[in-house]
Image (cartoon, rainbow, N blue to C red):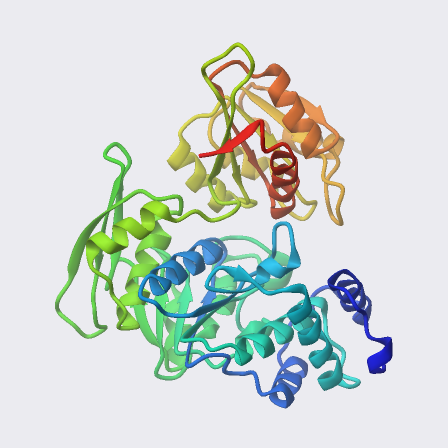
Amino acid sequence: MTLADKPGTVTRWLEHLESLHAADIELGLERVRSVALSLDCLRPAPFVVLIAGTNGKGTTTAWLSALLQRQGLRVGCYNSPHIQRYNERVSVNGVDITDADLCRSFALVEEARGDTPLTYFEFGTLAALSWLKTQPLDVCILEIGLGGRLDAVNIAEADLCIVTSVGLDHQSWLGDSREAIAGEKYAIARQGVCLVSGEPEPPANARQVVAERGGIWVGRGEQFDVQEDTAASVCHVSFRPEVASDITMHWQLPLGAIPTPNIATGLQALALMDHLLPEQSVARTLDKLSVRGRMQSWESVTEGSDEPLTVTLDVAHNPQAATYLAQRMGRVDGIVLAMLEDKSPADVLRALPKRNRVIAAGLSCARGLSAIELEEHLQQGMTEPFEVLQADTVSDGIQLVQSIATAGEHWLIVGSFFTVEAALNVIEADHSEWKSI
């Protein structure tokens, strides 16, 4: 492809990326590392944090970024997947990369790769790293896309590694046991570099994998921990300012819009980076922090009623994430559920908050389940009586909620990033009716 032939918009570039490789996913680092070396982007900032895990990567990234920005530092982030726009994946201090910069970065990767085949994710990762390298950053936080050991992001030179959690997800790629998945995720460990493990009971092989790579283990339940007091709306976090320190700090923080395990994991990581803030400053940052698609709530007041309808959006798509939602939310009046075909809808629904009604909504995207297919999954795994309704799309599901819900009800919209994207498109298109809370 010549310079004159290169796509001119983000949409056209993404179409080009999708056409380059027959497989959506091809685990392995040789191809992507060779292109990264030619781009000189293996170290995109003076300090690089690498985050892997089944759940909690995005919230931990946002939490760390907010705490570092509060100190006046410039923080670059690479996340995936996005919710509404591809540009969300690459940002500096919360500002997404522009279309122009993204297209230029894609063009650089296209020139550098030559005949080397790259997947959609590998190409995007290289574009992100090459652009972040050009920015005046203090810290760069990179989120692993899938697994860890063979994920394209793992080519980066990291100064601190984090594994947030280990659950059963992407088994066809990572293995069908927590031990197999841990072997992939904890393999991001580096020689002489701290690895913060946020998993309360990691598989037995996790520590061994870190040790084999020369990493320094910093584990939840050992160097740091957290207890949640839902009744008092606080969490109690303990952590060590240094790995080998005998000193343990004990803080009380408010329950934020992110899971408490991620609060503790991020705080321990911040201490190891020697960027610890005072307790009250951390609490104020947590109070203000909101992460798109993670326990994100909206209200709609119907005509003739003073009590609003509340909907909470969350990208949870596996039983582990669904269980945490149930712990935080208790019970809801209903759930709009839309999922992908490679997930386990019945297992997720069993773990979600108790409810009286479920709307099975279709997803019109690759691998998306139709409403009929989703309901069939739910009926097969149903263990308790509740009403199941169908909606062709998430948009139709929201309209159905508005027509059947009574004043003061609270509904959960959940199941995938695509589910939240569709819901946000509806809500933000009618901003006069919905209010973010």
